[in-house]
Structures are given as C-alpha cells and as structure tokens.
Figure: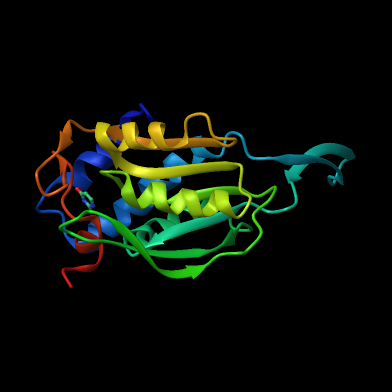
Length: 208
Ligand code: URA
C-alpha cells in the first residue's frame, strides 16, 4: 500500500461522487503514475556504458526482454496512459474480462497477449481489487504462459480481494505483488468496495 500524501489527496478526489468523468480520468492517470513508480522498483535493468558530453559513464537501461503492461479492459484502460508515461518503451498486451454481476465470476472476451511470457516482467492494470475474481483469472492466464513476476497495480483493494489473491498464489512458483493506493473496509452485497468509488468503468467512461 502506498502511503503518500499526494496519493491520498488524489484518491480522495477520485472517490468523491461529484467528481466528473473528465476529472476522474485525469486523477486516475496521475495516481497510476505515482503507483507505478513504486510498482517498478524491481524493474530489471542492465549495465550500459554511455558517453556524456564530458566523459564516458556507466549507467543502466531497461533489460531485454522488455516488460509488458496489461490493462484489463474496460476499466484498466483508464490506467494505461499513466503507466506508459513512466515506461514508454514497455510493450502493451490487452486482456478483456467481464464480471457477471450476479455470479461475480470473470470470463475472458479478448486476449491480445503474447503466447510466451517466460522472462517477462508483467504489470497488470486493474483499478478495483474487489472479490479478486477478475485479477486471479487474469494472473492465472499470465502464469500459464510462463510469466513468473507479476505486479498488479490497483487503485483500491478490498480485504476479500487480497485474501483471494493470497489463497490463489501462495506457494505457487511465481512472485505476485499487488500495489494499491488504499485498502478499504469491505465489499457490499453487490460486490462493490466500501467506501470505494463506485463502478470504475462507469466513472471513467460514463454508464453503458
Ligand atoms: N468494480 C468496480 O468498478 N467497483 C467496485 O467497487 C468493485 C468492482
């Protein structure tokens, strides 16, 4: 959990019901950039020798293969720009998942990901870690393609979602990390995070 006054300030504005979609999109983007800074602290780099205008210097650059960023459609799309600002050379894959509002089960409707994710550091973007059903299904798919380092960036998380993630990935041959701006109280009977911010997709894009 990122404990930072700017993150807390932006998250509070994001939560307000009177915040417009336009402002919500902007705040979500800014928040993701702040979260991404923390989420990428284990990013793999390789040494490189460069020439400055003054002398030769040793530095680092992002290692190959490049990391891959995976926004989960639809709401994860609202986090993509904020992430790519920090890692413009990362590759982007898309995963479309929809949650049945009655069963709360996630199904995949779009898969635009590489088939081989061995050695790739993967950053999954999903704003709301609620029951965890969507994120667990998404990360299971990534692990089945060989990913072993997966970091999920979520604006908000519920204890139920964190518990589901721990249960699903504890003891697995992979490092799965969740980075979030806040851990809220609970889920309500409709599976919404309380106090939360409502339906992230609707707030980003308007109700469809
Ligand atoms: N998805 C959302 O968009 N909001 C919630 O509170 C829970 C799941």
